[in-house]
Length: 136
Image (cartoon, rainbow, N blue to C red; front, top):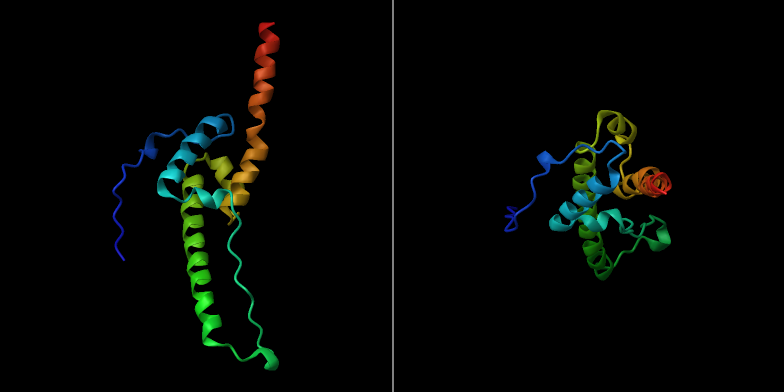
């Protein structure tokens, strides 16, 4: 399957690496990039759930209509997993080595993003209070 992009994507090679002090700026640039790729939903939604099929003798009969309804779910799950890998890869590629080592084992881009926001997202409020306090 060949996919061609008709959109112009930003050059992320010039984006400064996320080191914790520049989270607001870097996160906004990455979010814009993910929106352009149409993969930003991975950061805010849970993965699609696929119903678990049992092999019990009483439920062993699977109708054709049931398997047909599972096909779109399988495609959604596969798309989500592919997009999750894309987002996770870009996030890891745009952070310093110390942060990379901390987050490399996380497989969910949503959990990854939430952890970054919790750890570094509130820092701006502290800086603003400091600057305003110093100014006053």
